[in-house]
Length: 168
Image 1 (cartoon, rainbow, N blue to C red):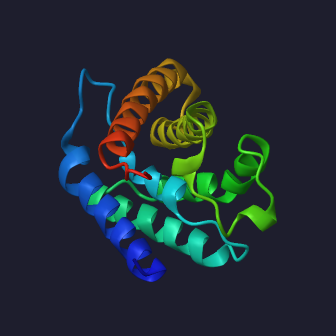
Image 2: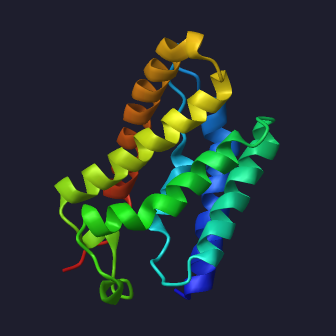
Image 3: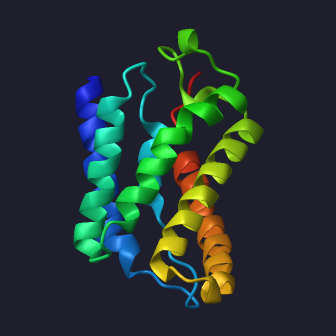
């Protein structure tokens, strides 16, 4: 599949999935999955980061427009998109020469889990901190971050297991 078509498909798929399905889930008052951050995980690596950061910001802005949330999704996804390369270098041990052939599906489960879990917790902590915007609600921020991160990670790994291509 052409790279541009793949990126447009990812963008549209995660936008529609988040807005139509996942924004309507609020389980036990704390759990709300934000699976649109998978766009950051699956976007191909490149040395030119401006198009990626622009698309991540645009995705967050679209989620904000449909959720009426005032820019918190745009900031939180832009932040994890910006720090993504740091975690790819430290956790996955990739260099700039590895970017062209990088595929998250080819990495070991423990590295992928650490990478996605750290970025998901950072995203959710920033998101819920900006939504509550008070130190009096720190307990709510931490509980929302924990439960929503776990649910988002379960959905991510379940989806990656279901849609995995057989390499053999």
